[in-house]
Length: 401
Image (cartoon, rainbow, N blue to C red; front, side, top):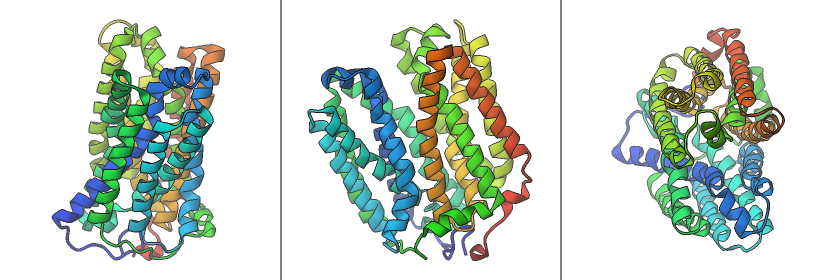
């Protein structure tokens, strides 16, 4: 069986299989873009729908929380439904949610569409994260995982900046409509390119809780929570951080964020190879480097190139998180699909907690303090991994042998 999946390994990989991998990647790209797009359009939406910026921020919090709970619960609810069907239906629902979001005239209705977006994000991620080993031959799984999770980094590089630019040039509703059109194309591509993906066994709640029997899974969950909370506590406020600490003019912020996203995309592919060889070492290095970037930023990110270099380091390292932690989980998990759903829950709930906690720190103590707080969380994550033997990640379940 393929490691950690319970499915027979693929013996060969055809060109069509790689196109299926790309379709899944683009699906994740669109979903992550949809989740984070309101960050760039917050002022427009709050003005158009007559709500405060703080209330408008619920457009990010709500889908994150909903995604967190739909990730473990949706695979349980659908039982043995073919995963090809599930991914296609979720992307079709995403098409509908984005189209409705572009048309509603009240913030309450817009939040309702964001709930649908959250369901799509959680359910899609829970399944897509473990698909690489079902789509390509075993030696090519690390590469396929890197391609799939490049959608996360790609959303930062292209999706959110492009959507923000489109909204600025036209209207925020046009950006939402564009998301709907892209999702419709991907819906067709998923159905056309993916092979049948029957569930080997239905995911049950007992499967989800059973993942904690593995020390490797427990540590992976703890590390994910600490790293993601730490990242979003600070990154949610990256625009004012760049302006007030690094002295970057507002007009240059989007360019720097583009560099940040590009570095993240590169880091994703480097980490995909590194994690395939040694996930323990890769996941250990990630929070250590993030701590260096965030703790150094208030001291060295003044006028000049230092701030840009630290931001690119931050982007490159964070871009490697999804594929590295997913590789860790698939090595340690008793049940890959259940563990992937669990990780999607932890990742998304940590986004919401991080953004909310970061806001409290910024309001109470300032931007430098939130960077120091994030750095401490990263150091704690590194300590958690360091205290875990590498053998905990190498463990595989009985179904994988």
